[in-house]
Image (cartoon, rainbow, N blue to C red):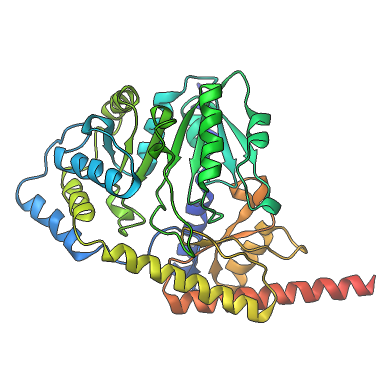
Length: 399
């Protein structure tokens, strides 16, 4: 019998999804689990956004929309890019998609051919490499140096660029590290893309969550590079709309045209009424975004203070996103430690190695659970790490 696709069979499910499902199973069996594995904000979608969708449904927005998205939403995205990011585009350079992940796939597939190489800056989101493979290209993992704060530098990039390199995937602020790329780093990446004739796909989904003076800069704002940059973004994180599945991309017209063809032949479009919600999100009050940013920063500081007071967890303060990326004790692998935390202590987090080899020896902790649960989890993690280190020290002295 003919076998199904070997490429797809080798993908599996994202580790973050798989861990969340394991945690859900434990909860169903009656076990208390603090879910820190998922990037799903615990905040509700703001009421004015919900009401806009309800009004749209009642007004009959339940039929096919334009493939690239409704005019009002695309215009709102054009205005948002100019207002917030200094990126000047036309409505023809915008495509709305059912989620940023779908927009990301359409962007990559529109840019690459089978056999092309795409550079992925590790540690990186677990979906980037499988998405590149589904597009028929080869993910080339560029391991950034944790000892240099995951700096994006020319020498490291040049070592990985070959004759088949077609694009570079950039994520800033970065999931899982929380790193925010500086203007100098973006200039390094952009100038190299110009010299080597490469595309840049910039995932900016966490743009609104930056802390301590860090600034999100879009590489598309620089006219020297904008003609080779595709920006991917969405509503899931900033407006707590993960379940709405609403994202978008912006780039050169020729790329948006190709991405639209892919979308037309696959998912067709985003849902009509969700696009009315998107307009309300972008044009309505933005204090909800500021409030979410303040909450995630407060949760970050709460966890770091607790860990610092015990001295058992080493972790830098993330510059952005709503994640922390602490070191794990050396006595066990990060996978084993994540399993121990989940099974024995009811705390679900993600082993750093699933984000690339240079993520090994760390955990990704999501700050999207209720604050009291996050505080409990921080205490459990500190106690568990301290016990592991104590046990290791005892074994060392015994030998």
